[in-house]
Amino acid sequence: MQSTILEKIKGHLVVSCQALPEEPLHSPFIMGKMAYAAMLGGAKGIRANSVADIKEMKQTVDLPIIGIIKNVYDSCDVFITPTFKEVKALVDEGVDMIALDATKRDRPDGKTLAELFKELKQAFPDQLFMADCSTFEEAVFAESIGFDCVSTTLNGYTAYTKGESLPNFDLLGQMINHCDIPVILEGGVWETDDVETALMLGAHAVVVGTAITRPMEITKRFVAKTQVQSLHH
Image 1 (cartoon, helix red, strand yellow):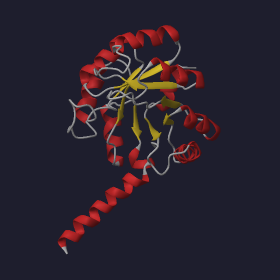
Image 2 (tube, one colour):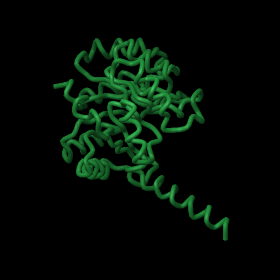
Image 3 (cartoon, one colour):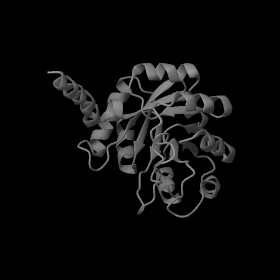
Image 4 (cartoon, one colour):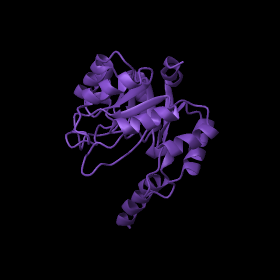
């Protein structure tokens, strides 16, 4: 059953339905509706943050869910499913695949990624894991320690990749050429052509979030164009 999750999303769109506490749409009920809308639109998977949102989505959609828990610890930069505790909560909820920060940065509990992942595989041998990476080296390392798939999710969001233009098709191509596990494009996908390009390059699937599910950010994009216009008048 597990292997079919990656098969189900192969060549398809996964929609990331998330709203942080400071955002207007923050609510499990609304995220459940957002996931349902994505499913009706043809998405083949959902990426979701928090057990509460995932519980709600399971009532509305019958799609594979890539689960994360965003948790900020003090001044630590790693906040996507950062420790064993968050992973366990997602496993207990029965999430199809769990994504976690697979960057080389220090983790809040002081463990290296390799140490944490070894514990996770021992505790949850049947769970599928996705590595959210920011560089090619991180993806190669994630594959070497046993992740089931890698993604470009954190490219442009780590201090050492800031400013790289997104979506990063060069990085995607590198990962695809060197990794034997599925490579997923995520991060900065704004145009429908980006999806086509990624799949043509050999991406296993494409995750789109902000461009579909964050109306505040979508509105800002359009408003920016009104400001450009007003400068000309």
